[in-house]
Amino acid sequence: MLPVALVGGALLPYDVTMLHSVSAATANPANSASPRFFESVGIRTGSRVLDIGCGNGDLGRFVARLAGPPQGEVVAVDSSEAALALACAAGREPNTAPITYRAADLAADLHDLSRFDVIVGRRVLMYLPDASATLARLVGLANPGAILAFQEHARASLPFGLAALPLHRRLYDWVWDTVAAEGGDVTLGLRLVDQMRSQGLSIVQARNEGVLIQPDHPSFLPTLMRIMLPRLIEHGVASAEEVQPDTFAQRIRDEHRAVGGTIVWDQAFLVAGLVAG
Ligand SMILES: C[S@@+](CC[C@H](N)C(=O)[O-])C[C@H]1O[C@@H](n2cnc3c(N)ncnc32)[C@H](O)[C@@H]1O
Image (cartoon, rainbow, N blue to C red; front, side, top):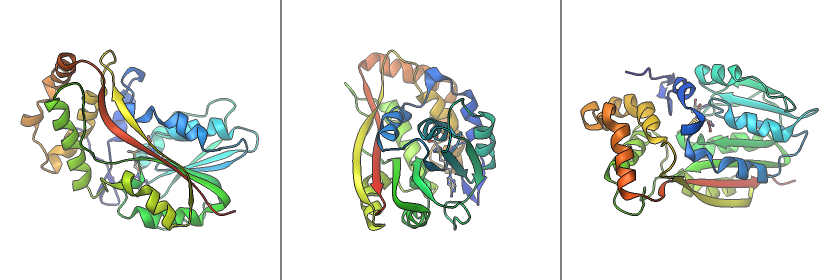
């Protein structure tokens, strides 16, 4: 069984060590909306940026390119030492802003981080026990006129494609049932605009983008299944006998091949708001 990491008593949204094994070919398609969105929110050279729940540091490295040297800076925080170690190990890319990694619990007080021009996060608020309270703390760390930009997700009647996709649907339900069992908010994507407005932010962008799986690309779903399996079992959502991990990749490929076409797997909610200047 894969190891399951603990953060303050709560299960991590995933086992970050698994991310080592995710090749570019099977990169998480849920991230495909991120570059366009975060590029569009107005991160300027010289900005001081906070990346919350940085995980393996992928988003932090992306915004470090936008904040760029000489004056820019990215502070990337996560409560998981394993995630921070993984992010640190990736190193700094040339001609990007320096990144400082810090351990921090977003569900607790965020002191001594100083102020930021931009605060970003991807798939983090949805895992917190009280995203509103965290948003209020983040607004407290923001400079006047700062941008807060988040990519979050929500459970929907998915996936859909050209015909019924029973195995894809089963995996989708297993994943979201597990997130719910772990205390995540499976509706956060739909609440984000309201929650950001409640913190006094004016919304400058609110979009939704389908996360697509194409028939001619290696599917991320077998990797997702392997990442999730210990947690499915832990929460009694599914047993190994039901998942049949040894044949899962072949069966999911066969199902997609039989149906053909694009599968809409998930929805990314992309919301940016401005702190009053
Ligand atoms: C689904 S991952 C997303 C990682 C990264 N943002 C990305 O897009 O690749 C969620 C991250 O949030 C972090 N996280 C969850 N709860 C947290 C908390 N209370 N405080 C800080 N980080 C937390 C986890 O450790 C994990 O790295």
